[in-house]
Image 1 (spheres, one colour):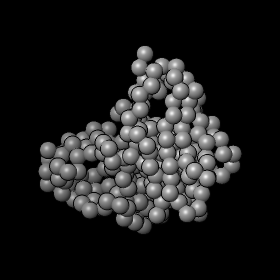
Image 2 (cartoon, rainbow over the protein chains, first blue to last red):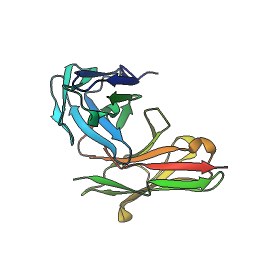
Image 3 (cartoon, each protein chain N blue to C red):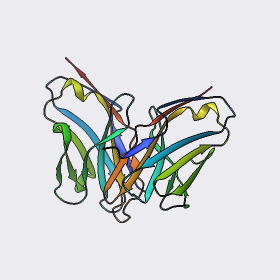
Image 4 (cartoon, rainbow over the protein chains, first blue to last red):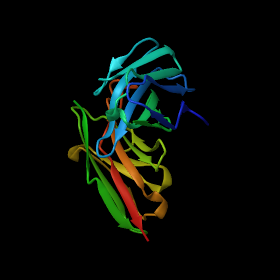
Length: 110
Length: 115
């Protein structure tokens, strides 16, 4: 019953490293999203994509980029990781009236 | 712009007591509304959703929520709390006129259940 998977549950990276977070969905959804979750702030939208090779900035895109080369895969890229990007990252995909989340990746940048 | 406000970042109840988690939305037209639950170290799981059918929506694990347009509210309730209900709960809204748009989340409410 797997719907949305994320490449890692836990990740530790050093400041300045380039980081790739991968998300794959098996529901043939066109829309995919990346959120970050921080205590007291809820979920904040980083980037989203309505179609292959299309991307739109969310509320907090600074320091991030994304890639969507295939419909089922949506990657979040931290070009040069910083300590303030330590967070839980959640991927989601949506179809008509439904939204499914992946299990999340807890990223620590030291 | 749409927004969601969850009143109370932390709610504590005794086992067997009523659970009430409050959510108010701001939208120019009635949106789609959702409640998600997150257990420790896990992703978000959909509890229930309102998409313009019945205003009283029943979800999983005995939870339900009522859409009240006049109050712009979508509060989550459960008649009798169980220890396993301890988790973080998020209310979310999306634009009904744009299928598949991003959900806008509240800041979450942590539910604690004591024996």
